[in-house]
Length: 203
Ligand SMILES: N[C@@H](CCC(=O)N[C@@H](CS)C(=O)NCC(=O)O)C(=O)O
Image 1 (cartoon, rainbow, N blue to C red):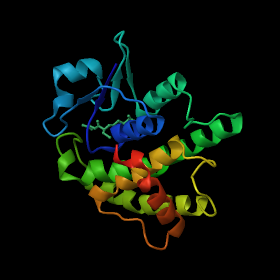
Image 2: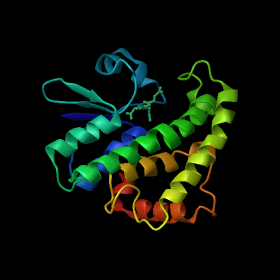
Image 3: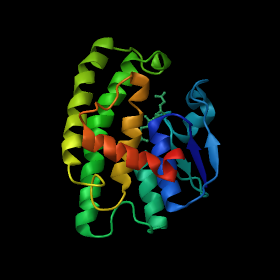
Image 4: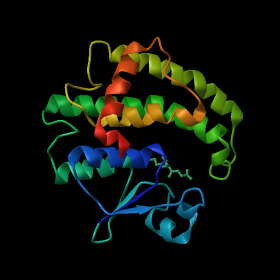
């Protein structure tokens, strides 16, 4: 088994944090995104979408999409559970993970992909106007998540879950687009400190 990953972007980091929480060690292949290795023939043969992460199983099966890779490892190693054990917890983790992905993460990604110089060759054409339209959406999503975290330690349920990992990777992905969590969003700030303090955050 091999995990194709890259150091800085959020999606491969989601998988690395997930694996660290589970205590699973998977051989890794670092894909050089700066030098466009993911656009080369070898990686394109693995993932025609030319994105990381990708997981190659021993029989050659390729799994992409960070959430799908995490679900694969949850099924292989159910404990500690990061997707929930009860029907209710499973649904809540999924609900919050999707809210983070479709809400906050997609707004941040739109700003990053359409405004950051590093994405010039990947996002063609870059549309600066689309980036600017998404900046206020990022703030709206942060406000929503801040209120959702009122009185709660973790986002979805009473344990640190895959939804928290998605949120941590999204919030940290705001650094390159120079958006910070406003001080007024105290619940989100408290949550971010707690999530960042877990050893897995360094993965
Ligand atoms: N939905 C996918 C997103 C994968 C993705 O967009 N990966 C980015 C890094 S976070 C990438 O490989 N970007 C390279 C490019 O756009 O050229 C997932 O969750 O795995």
